[in-house]
Length: 133
Image (cartoon, rainbow, N blue to C red; front, side, top):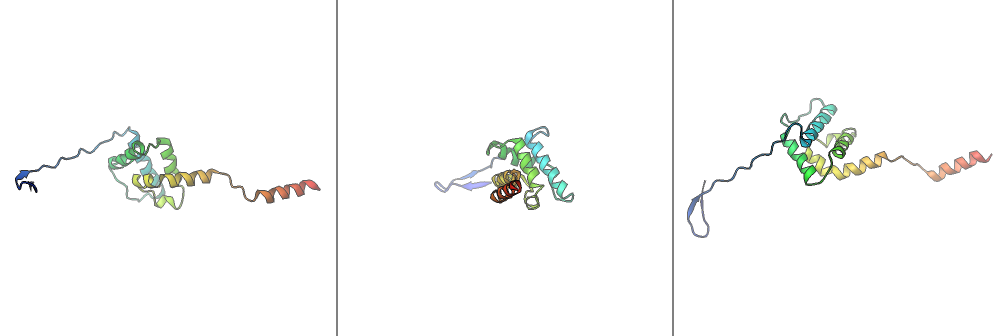
């Protein structure tokens, strides 16, 4: 590719550097997460469009683990929760979606684990009345 210098007007050859795409071994934690997401998606929809080469997804999970400082087991829990939830299973279809919604999913997952308390004052009053007589 020929370019012209805007300062001196000289023409020169320019060869853009090709970035080497990082490849992940199938035993890596990134590839493991990519496979886990793929299987979760196919569990919800056996006809879903998922990539045959999971390396691109592994790159996405590499970013989630390395840049966002997330843990593998916690990420698996997030994916499992998302695909057990009617709303999230249609929205978490890529590592980018997991990464983008990670905090929202964590909060909702933690809230769903808390026992529902109802109206504790009413329950206490009913217990008191039942035990009174």
